Image (cartoon, rainbow, N blue to C red; front, side, top):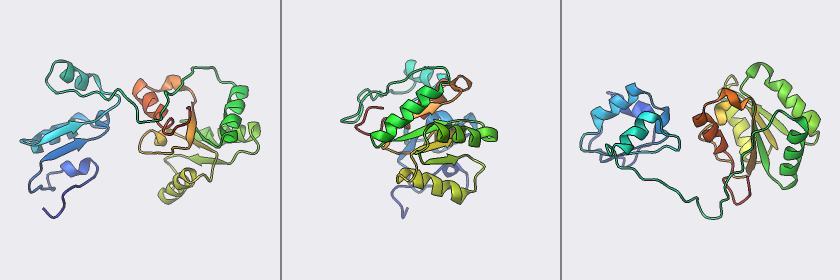
Length: 209
């Protein structure tokens, strides 16, 4: 009982973790939790208020809300000075990539380029370097050493790179207000939830994304 608030991963619902007087449980990114974890949550949430947060609810969760098995609150209004994100579906086009990245850099912004194949991610970064020679480019993926990946992400957040070429590791938990453009290569290989999460990496400032 010495802590009022604890923030952690799903390990908090382990049987080894005992709460003295738990009153509120908040589950963020609820769609990422499997049935097993949710069953564990049921064992600790008796007489506990529970908030589950998601921008992309799975059908099961949505059905619970529509059947009034759960109360539903919808946040329809964005934070102040935010603009809707403009999304376009296009064929792979080097001219479009060059123009969009050049425009973003000229207005002082940064760019995400999602390419979910580690095997040739360096080739994609090389292509971008060829198209925009002055751009500073970083490459990030899950096979990098943990410390190197952390340094890369912190470097991008502090403006050391103009373009971050990465796999879907940027999908959640990354807040870079200066990043206003995102390319998702081979977007047809992703589900709507993944696309929505990745699109949410931009549009976090008062600039049009």
